[in-house]
Image (cartoon, rainbow, N blue to C red; front, side, top):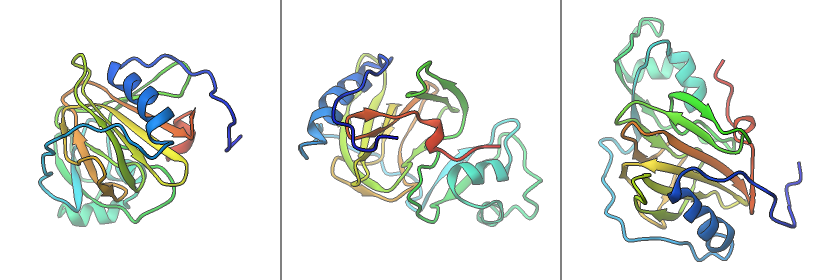
Length: 215
């Protein structure tokens, strides 16, 4: 993979207006110039700063969640006072502690996947109220408000040429310029799909190869 592209590659059209604004304005200009596009935002503090919450969906297990969020099933069980990790049921609200930091991207949320044809955009349909987590450690480089009822958008600068984009958010838990650790709650969704993208420089990357396999 060409890790140092010299020109802007063709990319698919973005389906969310908020995403297109950020991708054009911040990723291709502001972030690269270290002048991030940002708006004044009143972030809502999550109910627990050392992790996030997830409502278990039908067919999900602690092992599957652990692979997605970088936390082993035993740790998840202990954090939620579940003696047997195999004895969980849909509808349980689980606390997911911050993972041990890694240079790899983790899943920002858990839900039904809808992938754009190009593979460069991933839509995650998560339950109403699901918290969206930082896929990697980084700085909040840009935030745009809800545009055309598409939800708010956050861009993280991972300070090594990579950026990640999270669109379709309802509430925001962070403000522009905030440094966040991997797994920190950035905001939540209200039933509309979360749009997730990964960029390197001005190049939009295929998302799934950069995320852990769910099994």
